[in-house]
Image 1 (cartoon, rainbow, N blue to C red):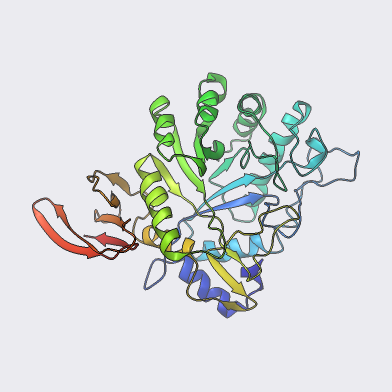
Image 2 (spheres, one colour):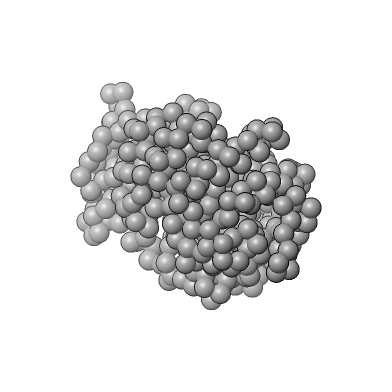
Amino acid sequence: MHLQKLDSTTRAALLQELFNTDKSNIGVSYLRLSMGASDLDEQVFSYNDLPQGQTDVNMTRFSLATDRLYLIPVLKQILAINPQIKLMASPWSPPVWMKTNQNSVGGSLLPQYYDAYALYFVRYVEEMKKEGIIIDAVTIQNEPLHPGNNPSLLMQAAEQAQFIKQSLGPAFRRSSINTKIIIYDHNADRPDYPITILQDNDARQYVDGSAFHLYGGQIDALSAVHNAHPDKHLYFTEQWVGAPGNLKGDLVWHVKNLIVGATRNWARTVLEWNLAADRQLNPHTPGGCTQCLGALTIDGNHVVSPRNPAYYVIAHAAKFVRPNSVRIGSNLVSRLSNVAFKRQEDGKKVLIVVNENDSGTLTFQIRWEGQVFSTSLRGGSVGTYVW
């Protein structure tokens, strides 16, 4: 909404800054969208909202109309800059007529609507494709164990497995949809949730991998899931920065735990939440997040500088660690959390280092095949090194 309301010149410049890789642009290469409303939309909506008492199991009234106001126009402009950008979509809630409580907050998906909800996913992928927008992956449900948000849904692991094997997986297969199905999409304190689903052979055949947030648990829980099911992928898909933000503290925590921590524990993506809000931290639904600081603050037609912490967290990696890069080994050093990659396109190596020491400068050496480079980082700062 904020991006689309900018004038065309300001918006074009900002999208170049975010999604191009040249000059001082930061090269964001992966985005997560909400299927229907997230709690950071102005109001709750789905793609099949009906008067109370009505149902539409054949999706004859399915419509992307709300997404056509802001989201689809902005995505088309982003795709013009980077046609290869990967898009993930996550629902916060099914249409309320499919739910046990007929409400956008909480409740569960009624089993009698599993097939209808699978068709809802199919229609979403197909209708977005008609707009020239390819959905690379879907998660089944954002934060399935947090039914207090607006919108939200409670979905236990057994229910998610049943929905996948009974309805969603077969529906994607029948429609020749290659969009990846990704499970869980919640905190690292419950690795048993995705492991439970992946132990169900009828469900796991349709599953590409598992997604995690880090509002609970430790990041190394991702490795527990990898070790149990090494053939399945892992994704880190959401972490907020709470307003008003503290660049020094936020940068260290997010780079240490996510840019370094998630990728050292097999994550193929690191996504922050979310891209933009205004000075009042709007929009959000009634009951949605009131303290979510966007990577950007957009004040009318003005994009506030400096940018917010999440912007710099992502920029340290996105511009340099391009898609298809592979993580390579780097030794663990006290107070200097780090992760290294080899880029596919040019074979260059990229090392990201964070000085966790709050105040003191740390001097260190980077050694590669007999060559040594000496450098230092001030306390609380991050360096990206490319050779």
